[in-house]
Image 1 (tube, helix red, strand yellow):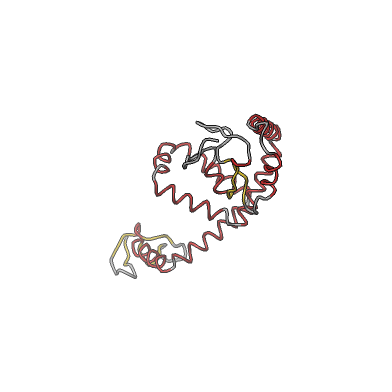
Image 2 (tube, helix red, strand yellow):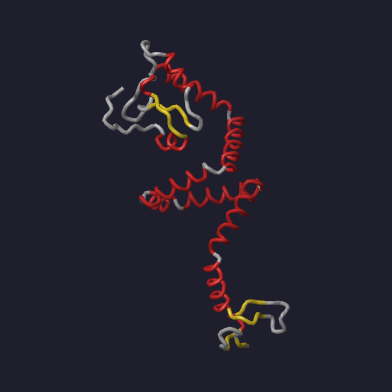
Length: 212
């Protein structure tokens, strides 16, 4: 059995048409090839609008539907586990690093994302108090061990008190770096944004500074 396509006027078998239960012959009047071409042209003209609508729908579902969000996270975890080598190869490319940096800097500017991350961190800390307490104690001990007797504690307190809004106090030379350890003194402190601080992590780039 075959029928003529309304667009290309070619005679094609029913298998090359999408089904339509309302039609007499059970198929639409346009073949699959023409439908694909039509949607391709339409998307090319309306690409920006569709992407924007997709973002709005995704964000609304992500922040409002907890069950759906957990399902998506589970799918992502399974995919990452089964594609570790491929992901490692793609992430090592310079263009991927730059794209990832731009992506996360954009996310941190989104107020809805900030609120969601804050709530998620709050829930995690509430469910893992033992871990939070252990890490806090370890951090205090490390800081005390790296604070010399001659350090100016008043200057350190003033530096923390004067931290600009949206910034964090960071050690230029990390207290427990991989190859070097700094001291908890006023001239080893600096102000960084949260993004810069997370990117720096526990590393130190020697840019002509003397070891502290």
